[in-house]
Length: 395
Image (cartoon, rainbow, N blue to C red; front, side, top):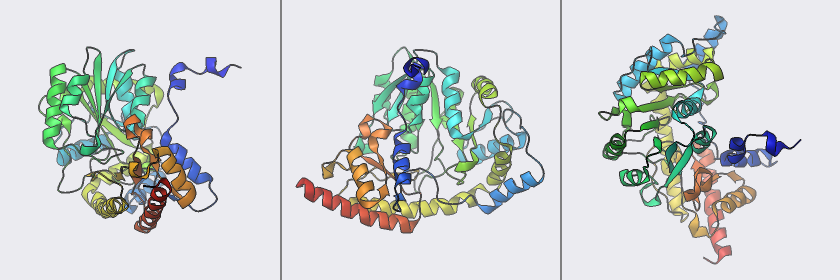
């Protein structure tokens, strides 16, 4: 059978995830590897949340839920979005509960994109954005960020990238992979460009709660005139250490949420009932659940940032999420070669920057969502590896 003819061209056009490649390489190694490659909290889901999930099973809550998610969860999300981000959404028709934030991203893109529509994406970015656009027959239009400002998109770059075929802009802040955060003035300037061109925004705010003081998360949906053209994607994976529960949500204008709901009905049907019960509990005491983990990440952030700079790798200070994105060009190695050798020689798995876009070449992503002991040991190995690489390169 000719598989090139049988597999869709859109599917063939998208590359395998660069993140998973290094995770899988590490898993195949017989020696113990410190993995700093996957963006998954090392914390176990807080007990009260797990207990709520267990109790729901004991009570026999094992059936399909409403397509949009349990009403009580949507009501809790509405309160949460209002209390934390000053965003008001109706639980009846302006939100949908999804299988993780990733499904919400896919739904929004498929709901608005026609073949040939352009979607502006600022790189480096989460690996799913371009793939989802391509699978929806859209055209990704890449803006390459600059390292001196954390690769953040600017209003000027966005305005220059607009054409008469632009339909959507995807913003992901705090950023995976750089940890960059847009401040209120930057968000407002970007919103002004978007309003001028009358297009949609997908605002991926999955790491919103992991914004480190004194910085604060500010959603573009909170800018006057932006709520009706923005879908906010969020979820429970990162802030509540609930990656395996696969529960997320999207909030936005009712007609757009209705379109997303239609796709969700056919493709997924509903989110897991047990995970929804646990998510309800998570939102009952959100600040307490989040604060301890965020404080721990903040300490780890400082440790890794200091170690990278001490090793001679310039690094923008991440202000959110749980990643650093150091510049490894001083070693004379490409990103892929740096990561491959670091894994083989020092048994530490990280991800090459080009996995998140071409402009990430010369950088690597290090996740600090692991124990402090692991991070300390990994940073010892990083300094040793960088020094050895520079000696071999004659630098």
